Image (cartoon, rainbow, N blue to C red):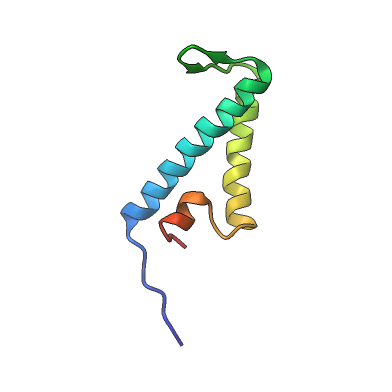
Length: 80
């Protein structure tokens, strides 16, 4: 019988921050491309596209935990 070692808190927090930033910028750019929100300095979303972005970010975290055994950065940083 093996016991799992506890994960450092800084790795959990870092994974959550990196997951949010990755999801925000990747999904934000995709949504901005679809809805015409690309600007010279990046992207700008308001109204329905912005709500869609935050809904997809929520879905990313939910699906990552429920179906994939962790989000991208939790898997990279081995936070389980």
